[in-house]
Structures are given as structure tokens and as C-alpha cells.
Image 1: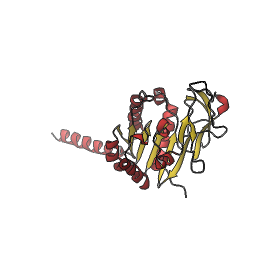
Image 2 (image 1 turned 120 degrees about the vertical axis):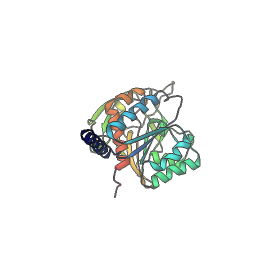
Image 3 (image 1 turned 30 degrees about the vertical axis):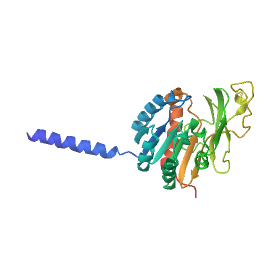
Image 4 (image 1 turned 180 degrees about the vertical axis):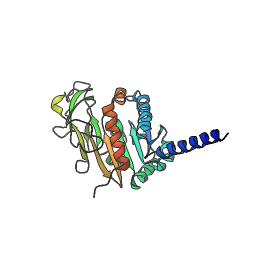
Length: 253
């Protein structure tokens, strides 16, 4: 009897210690929206986030409801808009997002988050640029501009990746810090989806960046168009690095 009691006590202590060491380091809320171009990414992305949260020890929740987003957001450290933008949010829900940033918390935008049809100046500035157009999906060479930033730590100086290479307008060049840029000489930037050639952006073509915005931290990456990206370790480490910085990064002095 004493042996069983001792075994039970040891089990309770071991369980308590395991729980104590398994504290979530921060809380991430993922927000996705079904659309014509990116709906296939959602299952792969959600599965990747579940695995990432388990491996990296952070709390993870997912919603596709703007009402649920606004209700839950105050309890989370970082919100990730994955192929979601402001088009589906009411003014009241935008205010909740503003309060999130005002409280010093984090925002991560992925891929088509910059592609809003309805202009909201605050949200456009939160992203750092407004989607203009993109050529056909193709491979190109990226340049790593900051190997000390969490999203870029593992990336080489030059990185070959296949993507929709977004062109931007209203780019906040003076406010954002560019992390990755694409070399337009390594792909056909004019190759659109009709006979009218695209213009590209020239030598300054940012692809991922970060900024301090309205009291909080904002990280944006254009990468992540296809479901396969969410099965690629280099890409997922890039994304987690951005999430980590949005949750824990220090503000500029």
C-alpha cells in the first residue's frame, strides 16, 4: 500500500513539474479568410501552425470569423492574418485591432494580406504597402538583408524560391525595414496574365519587412502562396521568426 502511495506521489510530482516546464511562451491567434485564390492553403497552414506551436511551445488558436477574432484578440500576444485582410472587418473590429497594437502587441501579415479591395489607411500602413499586381508564379533569387533578424537567421545570403512576386504601391519606404528583396533580373517581371507587360519595381523590390507601428510590432512577408510552402522548413522557420519578433521583439529607441 505504501509503495502504491509513493508511486502515486511521484507521478503527481512528475506531472506537475512537466506542466510547470511546459508553459506557453506567448499566445498566437491565426485569422484566415476563404477566397478564390488561396483557400487551398488554409488546411496546410493550420496543420503547420499546430505542429509549430507544439514544437516551439506557444499557445495557438485559429478562427475564420471576424466576430470571433474581435472577441478573442485582447487575450493574445500576436495575431496572424494569413491571406486575410481588412475587407471582411467592420470599423468596430478594426478598432479592436488598433487597440491590440496600441497595447504594444504584435501583428503578422502573410502573402495576400496586402491585397485589400477596400482602402483603409490605418490597415494599409500597418502592412507597410498596398498590393498592385504580380507576374505569373515563377522562381527568383532573394537577397537576405539582415541575417540577425529572427525570420532570417537560417536563410543564406541568396535564396532561390518560387512565388508570386508582388509589386506594391504606397510603399512606406521610410518606415519599414526590409528583410528580403527579390532580384528582378532573375525572373520575368513583365510576364502577367494577359498581353500587357507589367512594370515591376526595379532595384528596390522588397518582399519581407518589419516596422514598429502605432505602439506595436508589425511583420509582413509576401511569401506563402501555395500549400507546399507550409510544408517547407525554411519557409516555416522564416514565418516563425516573424511571429517570435512580433511577440517578443524590442522596440526601436
